[in-house]
Image 1 (cartoon, one colour):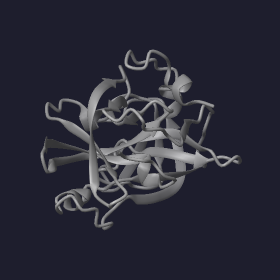
Image 2 (cartoon, rainbow, N blue to C red):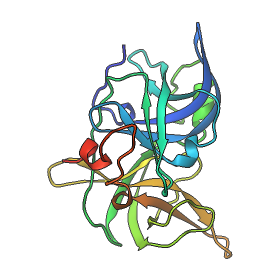
Image 3 (cartoon, rainbow, N blue to C red):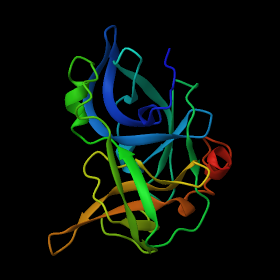
Length: 229
């Protein structure tokens, strides 16, 4: 039985493919990051993290004995336009500390980010033991600008351009702020980087305002209803 605590790693998690057997889960590929929303075990990630994958996908958490514990993703739905997906695992007791921001954010707004780098695969391959290195990474930065046009090789058109590069594996992680009441409010979903013709990278997140009113069939109501307050 998995019991959540106040640790961030109980709410932001890596997504991997694998096969469940008598000894646990045999991992194959690290896909990216995800995070829980609401109080009914739903989570959000980038659509490209799970899209087109025909293998079993597992959301990975660390239990009290410091072992990796995988919950199979049993349901998923992709946003019709933006690079965002909602998922649900076989563990229906999971709850979240994240709320949808439901506010306009412009350039200069500061943000925080927790995510899992692709080096996580080395941990997951280490006989299921959570070594702690590499583990979750933390970034903070500011929104460089809002965009409302397509970005080459990216799905959608509602983006924040960010000041910090997350790197491989961070797709699907939350871009958030902590408000004056101490609540963790999601402003966007990290979806990747672009290398421009000058050899420099810029990172992007899908804006929360582009998905807050989305009502997936999986949910039966909007993302804002599920995770707003």
